Length: 451
Image (tube, rainbow, N blue to C red; front, side):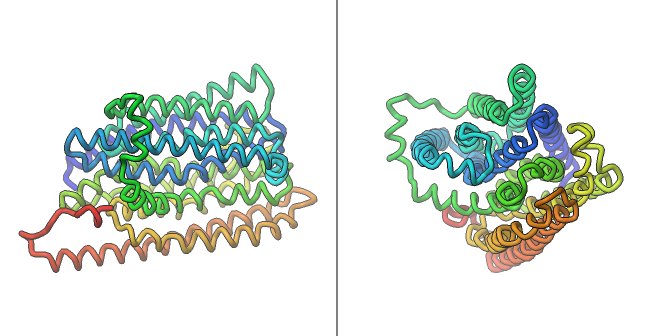
C-alpha cells in the first residue's frame, strides 16, 4: 500500500472505528440500565440479543452481496437493478416474518419455557427487531460498496445511541423489564435502517413496481451470490453468539446474567474489529475486479492483532473495570471470566478478517469449507453445555463457567487455524492462475467467478 492509500485507509477506518466505538459504547452502556432488571429477566434479555445476532446471519450475506454490487457498479441501470432486488427481498422477508409470527404465537408457551423468558412479548419484540436486522444490512452494503463510510458510520452510531436513550427513558420512567429493553433495541434498528435507506441514494421505485419486482429479478443469480457470502459471514456470528443461547437454555436462570455480563465485554472485541473489516472489504473487491494487487489484508491483520493484544493486557490487568463501569457490585463475581472471554474472542477477531478476505476475493466454493468447525463446535456446546451446567446448578461456580469459556476459546482457535489454511489455499490458487494467464490476456473476473 502507498502512503496515501494507508492514510486513506486509516482515515476511513478511523472514522468507522469512532462511529462503531460510540455506537458500541452506547449499546454497552444501555446495560447500565438493563442490569436493573431482575437477574432472570436480564439473562433472557441478553439471550434475545444473541438470538438477534443469529437471526441476522442471512443479512450478513445480503450486505456482502450489495457491497460487491455497489463496488462493481458501472451504470444507472445497475442502480435500478439493485433497487428492484432490495424491494423483492423486502417483500419476501415480510411474508416469511408473518409465517414465523404465526408459528411462534401458536407455540408461544413452549418457546417461552424453553428459553426461560418472562413472557411471549419479549420473543415477539425480538422477532420484530429481527425484521429490521435482516433488511438494514442491504442498505449498509450499498453504502459500504460505494465507500460512503461517512453515512455508514453515522448509521452505525445511531443504532447504539438511540438504544441507549430509549433504554434510559423506558427503564427509568417505566418498569425494569426485558420487554422495555427489547423495545429500545428495536427502536435503534428502525432509526439506523431509516438513515441508511435515505442516504444509499438508490432510485425510488413507484408503488406499482414493488410487487412485480419479485418476479422481475434473477433469483437464481442472487441466490448463487448470496449463499456463500451469507454462510461465510454467518460462521463468525454463529461462533460469537451460539454459546449464550446454550447457556440460557441449560444453565440456572439466576446465574445467566453473570455469564452474560462477562460475555458482553469479551464480544465487544469483535465489534471493534468490524470497522477495519468494513473498510477492507470493498477495497479488496475493487482490487480483484481491477486485477491490481493490494496488501490491505496484511495491514488489517496487523491492526487487528495489535487491538487484540491491548484488549488481552487490559483484561488481565483490570478485569473488573468494565464490570464496575456498567454493573453493580453483585456482578463482580463474574470478574474471573472477563480475561478468559477476551482471550477466547481474540482468535475469532483475526478469523473475521480472514473470512472477509476470502469473501471479498469471491471464492464461492471455498466458503463452504468454513462450515466444518462451526458445525462441530455447535454440537460440542450442545453436548457439553448441560454437563457444565450441572456443576453450577446449586450455586454460582466460577470454575464451571470458566470451563465453558475455555471451550469457546478452543473452538475459536480451531476456526482460526482452519481459516488460515483456507486462506493459504486460496492464495496458492490465485498465484497458479496468474502464472498460467499471459499478462496481456489477464481478464476481469467473469460473472460466475466473481460471485
